Each structure stands twice: as structure tokens, then as C-alpha cells.
Image: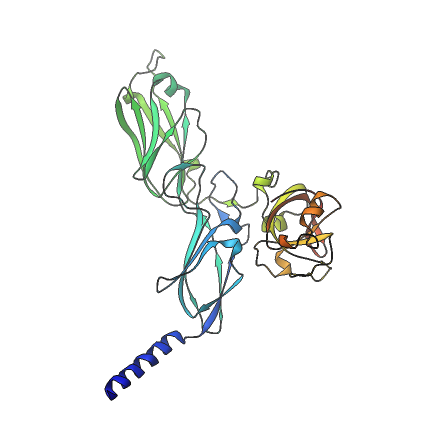
Length: 353
């Protein structure tokens, strides 16, 4: 009996030691909005909408949700964690679907802070076809497909979008007269966007050869974007509509700029030149503070927003609408370099929730 009690005592001590490693904090952020990425042909998505997963080394999931809703500092038991963030899930071929993300293995120290900066590059690969008129003449009944082990996409003659695939082998196939022929196969790596020219050889008389064997495929190496760079927010069209709005980080780096949309979270109000309130009760109806995440409490990470009299003030101000605190909004106005000591959005005249 004494041996059993002693054994149970040792086991309880062991369990206590395993759970008594102490706690630390995990702080996540993205690199600056000017971080270079591949030329995917589209706008970089809002990082606050990225999908974030944090798994402990034991396999337990400690967070699974959107990045914007995650606390700025997460209290965790000291130990190793796998942090994964993606712009969206991607599992099968699709047009206009670049996937960005990053994954890191990090250690949260006991009593300390693990400050992790995420660098999101393109995870999948892309192919775009440039179909010459000679091909249309030679193979009017033919169809082109881009195929991988995960599926295939029909590439019509008028298609101009980039087709995205998981990294690996991608084949260009021609179907005509009940026959399928592989014209070309390439092994694509993450971040690659490959442009392929498809044409048909001409006979000396000028007429097109008929049949599959007459088709040629060329690789446009000037569009083989393995290491090329894309600056987030570099497009002059960014911010011109609510569904392509600047993020808060974009806005800070692009001021001044007139008549643009900005997307973010209402995190506070009652602005002065050096301070802001992040919790109720609020007193001012004329301004709010918009941050990159719903949990943001650092004034310097936010933009100040003027609320002129009208529908935007009526819907957004925190005195009459306390439930707006923490909500995501899109607001249209003029970006200015300084409003209450921050990059600001003034003359705000439209909004979307």
C-alpha cells in the first residue's frame, strides 16, 4: 500500500512539472505592406481576413480563425507551436486564385514574448496561355485544357486569366477529333507564374496544317516570374471601390490620396492629438479610430477617421452605436497625412459594412 501511495505521489509530481512550465506571450504581425511578392496579376488581399491556425506541439489547436479577430497578444503555456496563415484555402485548380501564406515553428518562452513577423509569399503556381490566331485557324474544333493530378481547367480561346495549381506537374493538353494529346508538361514551383504561347505552324503556301501535330508551344521566359517582385499597394487603381479597398497598412503608406476606400476595424474614438479611447463610454460623435485588427490597442497602428454630419456619422459613431466597436467597416474619403497626429481619412462620405 505504501508503495502504491508513493508511486501515485511521484506521478502527480511529474504531471505538475509538465504543466508548470510557466506561460509566455505570442505576438503576431505581418511584414510591412511593401514586402515583395510575385507578380500574380491581382491585388494582395486584406491580411485581416487571412486564416490563422496555431497548433501546440501536442497537436492541440489553440487558435483557428481569421487573423483580424485574433488578440494582438496571446497568453500561452511555454513551448513550441506551429503557426500557419493563408489568404484562403486552395486544393484544386482555379482561375484568379493566388494563395498567399506563411508557416513557422516558434517557441514561446516562459515569462517572455515570442514576437513573430509573418512574410507572406505566393504558395501556389500559375499558368496563362497566349493563344495565337494561327491556332484558332488550324484547330477550330479543338479545346485546350490545363491539367494536374488535382484536376483540370478548360482554357477557352478568349480566356485571359491566370490558372492556378498546387505546385507540381502541370500539363497543357489539346483535345480534337476524340483524341487527347499532351503538348507540354512543366514542373512548377511555388511563386511561379508561367506564360505559354500556343500557335500553329504554317505551310509554305500559307495555309495552316491541319491536325494536332501542327501545334507548337513556346515558353515566354520574360513572364516566368520565379523571382520577380510585386509591391503591395503599388497599383494606382487600389482603393477605388469598396471591394478593393486599402487596408489600414495600405492607407498609411499611400497618404495623401483623394476619394479612396479604406477597410479596417473600428477600435476606438475620442481622438486628441496624442491619445484615443479604446473602450466605452465614448463622448465624441465626430471621429473614430480604425485599426488593422479588432483587438488593436496601439494608436500608432491605426488611422483616424473624420465623421462629418450625415449618414456615415449616424451609422458609425460610437456614442450612438456602441456595438460598432470591433466591427469591420469600409469607409470612403480623402486620405491625409495628418489628422489628430495620425494618417487620417477626412471628408468621409460613404460606407459599407
